[in-house]
Image 1 (cartoon, rainbow, N blue to C red):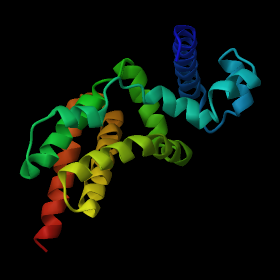
Image 2 (spheres, rainbow, N blue to C red; image 1 turned 30 degrees about the vertical axis):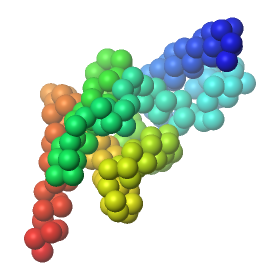
Image 3 (cartoon, rainbow, N blue to C red; image 1 turned 60 degrees about the vertical axis):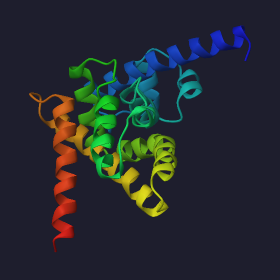
Image 4 (cartoon, one colour; image 1 turned 90 degrees about the vertical axis):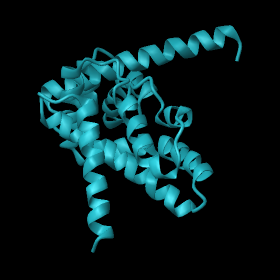
Length: 198
């Protein structure tokens, strides 16, 4: 990619991010379910055509705003030194860094996350957005674990715990995201222990 194309791509990414933030704020203020895409586009000051140039749907815009972490869970995990017995702890560490990597203010992000938690359409969009990241983590874990099915299970459990952490954090204005991640991962560990002892 030449420099001019690279500059255009960065400019497009910046506009897309700013529009996503405006869309998420507008939905949080006016009610996600109540708004049509046309109303959302108008509320963010762009035409319907411009909105759809950047997003496939209003769900896409809101979730894109919430997933603005500058940290890659898989890259963090790859940088850590651990053995099989410490894998779950390493995944928790990577998830905590991912969650803490947002550039959005906690108050704003909490309102968006609460909105996502309360909407089945937004939860489905979140899962769609996370598919590539989940596949990346699964591939990395397959390099560490001989049993591919176990690697898949670890990847799925990691994202389930991370989503649980975001839900806990969105519901409790006094908590920090790091403590919510620790709580969620501990809950999943306890469930595993209960199952193994039955």
